[in-house]
Length: 313
Image 1 (tube, one colour):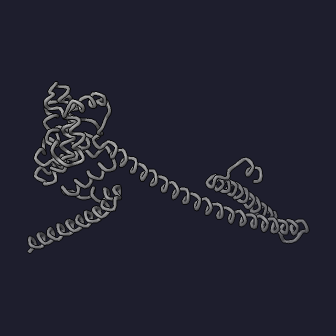
Image 2 (cartoon, helix red, strand yellow):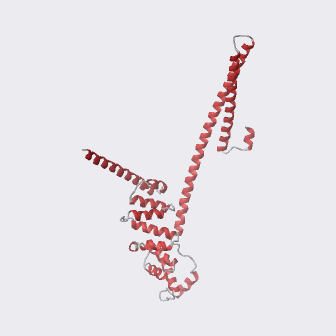
Image 3 (cartoon, helix red, strand yellow):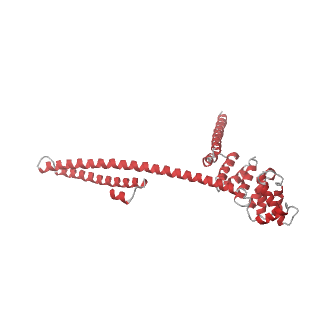
């Protein structure tokens, strides 16, 4: 009986855990689709699955965060049988290509040779070209020559350029193109996605700046509200202590007068009355100080703490 209860409790706990993880993943995926990548990561980080780890890494890649490469490598290491490892290898290759680490880019692209798109084949070919492996570079550029993708013109340029460097004129396009190539060989006709990456990086930097601006504005609003509340509170305390001083002065004056005329007031009562008056004045002085400080703090928060306003105060 006890064993059955334990099994039932374990089943219920596992069901609850699975349900919460699915909820976190769906919410993270929704935010990812809305391009709210920072918030999406906060959900993916709570889940230990290959899908959550992949999308967490995708967010870091899109946001140009330094941990993107680590997260993709962790996916490959922790989930070696995952179908997402192909995408992880491609993403790692693209990150290193973007960072001009061409040897590492070659390594990751080489893990997925059978599933590369035209743009990825071009990146691989260019990585070999930038690493001075011209024969391998030429081999991959050649795969693109008869295609119809946007990479074809650049691939033909580099293919002809390599052929010209190797003095393989049979592989060059024609004599006129060779002369043109010689004249423009130093011009970077293709940047391997660098411009697009820079554009996306600027976009997310702008988004980050807007978030920081919004956070700062909210912080200023909070400080202003707190300063105004402190100002009003200290003003109320000041008025209360002023009334207390006035009442103590009237009471002390009456008791002293009665004492001087020989009525029933004793010396002890006079001393107590003066002591109460002194306490009231001390409290009033402290209230005046707190009121002045709260006033200056409020002026500082709203940007009005100037020499002219201090003179008016």
